[in-house]
Length: 529
Image (cartoon, rainbow, N blue to C red):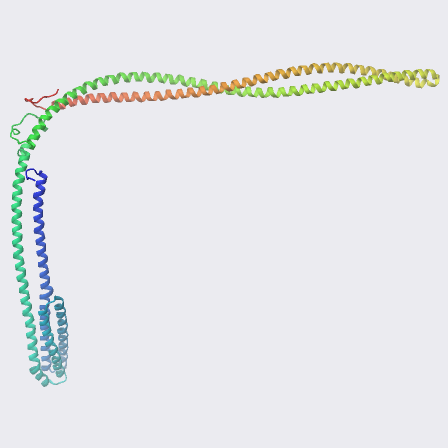
């Protein structure tokens, strides 16, 4: 892939990526060197320096012990001897304490030469230490001469050997320190050369990348950034005339693209100007139509309101008729029930009249029997009167009784005849009443049937009135909804009228805004108006 075909982002990313990689490499090498230097420093401090310090402490403790032992031979007072004895014991303890630490340090370092030297120091100390303690014992027990002999014959050679062993170890530690310094100096020189080389390479790459990116950016922009900014400000001010800087702009550059944008803006602004004029004209016509539609909508809304008011009145009337029909149906039902009960009463009356007629017949029969009995009694009384007349004076009382009986029989016969006549009249009257009751029953049955039919018709009227009332209520609801929709349409028409007026205003403003652009039509460019 060729460098020229890369995007600006790709070129910048590649250049800075290489620099970052080199920076990471340099930083990594520096960190590695710092880590190694730190390790060497820790090795020196924790190893060589530490062991040298411990060896020096052993040497110092040995010297203090030798001096204290010698002083014990010299001093004579008990206090001085006690102090020097304490000094010997403390120094002896320090010798073995530091020697133990030195052995441990050498064991951790895995240095056989240092271990050999330390073993030599420990070997001499194992011989010298008891001799020093014996000298102290002799001095404390008053054997100064014997102690002096031991110092001269035994202590001095061992002390010299111990000093030589510690000096040998000190010399070894200095040699080790020198080696570490030489290693550090060599590593420093190597890393310095590498870092200098990498920095030089990074500088060269940065310089090359800067030159390449500058050339590619200049070619991509087509002009200097100041010229591009000035050209963009000219376009922002509405000056779309052709500039001299764009003639030499290479194809594909930003300046060439701005020139293409200028030509496109000229065509686009012409089209926008024509469209804005059309929008302004169309919005004016729409606004006029909306005003007319708003007026007609208001008239329709007024008519719907009147229709709704009339439907409300009609609904009230139909509802009242339905309520009256329900009330009439209820009254007719009650009348039908009363007529039914009257028919039943008349039936019972006819039955009663029939019973009365039957009883009157029986009474007439009984009256006939009484009349027959009265006739026979009268005949018997007449026969008794005849027999009394035949008896003469003796039958006079019987004649009187027979006369009274005859009179009573005559009166009973007359009363029976009168009763018979009254009963006959009553039977005729009852018969006529029964006929009238039958006729009344028939009439009441007809009335009951008529009332039942009236009740049925009134029920149908009530049902029809209810259906009509519900239908009118639905019509009224529909009219109300139509009124609401009409009111909403009126509001929408008003909003549309306002929007049309606003659109007309915006169209005029757009025309004014487009008129701010200044440009000249050049050959090959057309402007749509």
